Amino acid sequence: MQISISGRHVEVTEPLKEHARAKAEHLLRFWNRIESIDVTLNVDNGRKLAEFVAMGPKGSRFASHADESDMYQSIDAAAMKLEKQIRKCHDKIVESRVKGSRRSRARSKEQQA
Image (cartoon, rainbow, N blue to C red; front, side, top):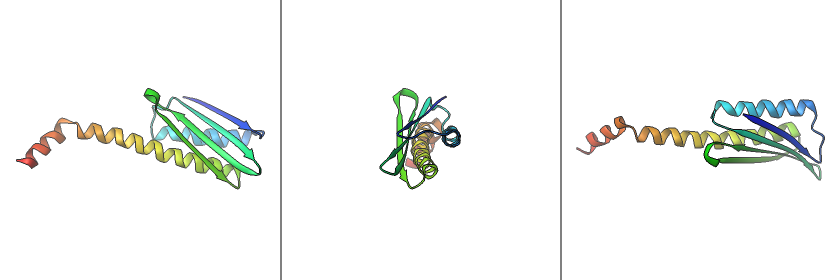
């Protein structure tokens, strides 16, 4: 997996990079098929913005951004939002596989009878 961390109107220090990288790597726990994550840190008129964009298989794209008073809090909030999106998508895929299995179809036939 490729992780890209960049800054817009801000110098990205090593501790910020490490914090963002740790949060991005944590997202792999929820879906290991993520191909790349781009993290953009931005300071605009005193607002600290963090944006995460994750690319998954078959062109799936997940994006989140957060605006907090502290850059570390922005990174945490954006990562949490992205985690929620990834979990939801992953759970839908797993659930659809279970619904389509032979066992679940057999159960539904028994219930109809």
